Amino acid sequence: MRILTSIGCTLALFPLLGTTVQANSIEITQEEAVSPSKAELLQQQQWETKAESLSNNNSDVVAQDDWTESDSVDSQEVENTFLQLQGISTYNFVPNRGAPGLTIANPSGFGSDRGQFFTGFSYQTDTRYGSGENESQDDGTFGFGYAFGNAQKAVGAEISYTMASFGSNRDFGTGGFNAKLHRQFPGNWAVAAGWNGFLNIGGDNDFEDSLYLTTTKIFKTREKLNSAFSRMAVTVGVGNGQFRTEDAIEDGDEGFNVFGSLAFRIATPVSGIVEWTGQDLAIGTSVSPFKRVPVTFNISVRDLAGAGDEPRVVMGVGTGF
Image (cartoon, rainbow, N blue to C red; front, side, top):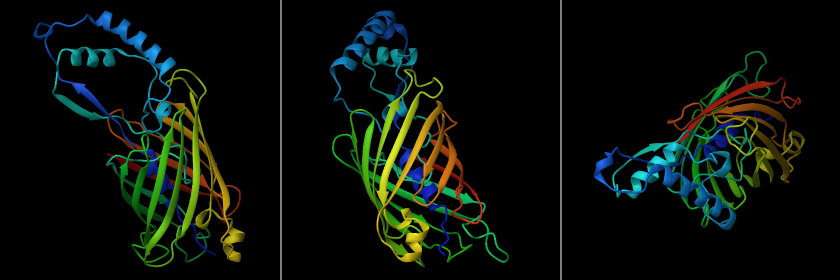
């Protein structure tokens, strides 16, 4: 029987840690330039925002769109625009917080692009069927990758490597290279196609030769992002390899199977997730606690429906920049 490690947790973190960059203007005295008042600017910006929302449905969106950004015009945004109108050309670039995850182990339709580097680590308290006497009970995985292209205007692409074990249940360093292509569309919707383990190192890994096609749609359930349960993300996909049922793996059936995830934005930095991995049920939470540090933490319980000998806890952390 194959031992399914938690590599999916690490892989799931990668496309969820995309960070945007805010241009924060340097401070300037009021006497250095003449420009409209802040009150006038705020009123103008509010009208422009309303007009844009009505007429420009095809504007570019940031990765994960409404899932990661506020809809309101705040004082800091007005201040930045106010200073920009004064001709400021020097900026301090500060990263935003990371985004809480849309999935636990399943790949989502969203991904990283435009020169982003990402990395993640996961640890599980027990491998599947690994709680017997004289058997390894815990293990970890590590992965990293690079993203390029533009998912809003054309296609985003990711190339990554996942080390599937630290030596507890297979040779140290065993792992594989993965590829993903993804595209974002207006309306908070994205699709992706990927190939996990297209090139492998060491012994067999649980994601070797796993092809998938997945799509994710984000629904706005409440107007303001900082409201409780303001967003819901639905992911549905098909895949073979790691996404097959246990019976299909035992029988050598290489057919495709369905997987899916449902995530709720419980609070601005926190999401709750329930998903079917193709083999079993998982439930967990994803948190991005720091406002200026793009780090996301995941914790979940997997094999709740009995695919393993008992449920197991999987924890992960990842970042991207």
